[in-house]
Amino acid sequence: MVHAPQIKISATYMRGGTSKGVFFRLQDLPEAARVPGPARDALLLRVIGSPDPYGKHIDGMGGATSSTSKVVIVAKSTRPGHDVDYLFGQVSINEPFIDWSGNCGNLSAAVGPFAIGSGLIDVDRVAHDGITTVRIWQANIGKTIVAHVPMTQGAVQETGEFELDGVTFPAAEIELAFMDPAAEEDGAGSAMFPTGNVVDDLDVPGLAMLKATMINAGIPTIFVDAAAIGYTGAELQDAINSDAKALAKFETIRAYGALRMGLIKNVDEIAKRQHTPKIAFVAKPADYLTSSGKRVAAHDIDLLVRAMSMGKLHHAMMGTAAVAIAAAAAVPGTLVNLAAGGGERDAVRFGHPSGTLRVGAQAKRQNDEWVVTKAVMSRSARVLMEGWVRVPAVLT
Image (tube, rainbow, N blue to C red):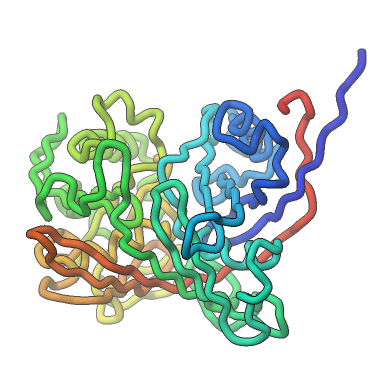
């Protein structure tokens, strides 16, 4: 029996924020995978090692969590005012599909450094020392991200003293600006509040009527009050992820929120839409211990936020959800804003399972609607490995 050899594809394994993923230049993919479709998905699923009924990703590059089962495709942009196009795929661990419906805010921090290091940025746009500004077109949601990447002697500076809770070691700071971050999602349009309200009554079978803030900013997100669903807002992963009933409850809330936001036409569709929308619960500040045992004092934060990603409580905070938190906090009357004390504010520091994060947003009323012109946060990124990934040739 003749066995086909594996093929190898140029790739870079990178950390961005509190996530990791496999990065590709579009031009390096096999021809059949340079366009959306089954060939691309089959290839990238095999790179990650999905679907894996064992939930370990032993035979692939994935890490068997929502934070580490990710792929990114970057190409030189032909869009005016942009340097690169960035496409993100959230790879299901147990099912044979990739969710292309939203962005990853954490990996957004790695796109600029990857683009510079991969020769996708014009040489005259790259600073020798100082900051290189990379203008990114986020192709999943059709939005602009501006990354400010530190440079030293013509190369991306990766080491530094910037500390990001959820990441063990310090690195160089990368500031990200998410421009006009209201996400243009299928069926939901580009309105920041798709229902027209900053707070809605959400009818969820089996639960009392819930107050919810449903927002399209960074990524579609459903915010509910922690106390209303039986939590304090200071929970860590084990308290949620070890409770099958709790996970089912969050998924039900997510499904009915997605239906109300116009993201799906019936609740059964949520099974094939794992990446969006996100669901998060908020509470007023309180003292708590992080997953690493560090104490966070109530007076050091504005509110508590916990968020679900791919059916599990996230170990820190998704970058796109952080954008949603910033946007919602900036709009008076949302559940996020009220948990933070109410009133007008352009920045908040929130507590998450791994520590704290400060995010900012500029919000204003325009034509009787709230709009956010920009959301800003800092992240870090670095190359973990570069070279080639290998996959069975039969898939291409």
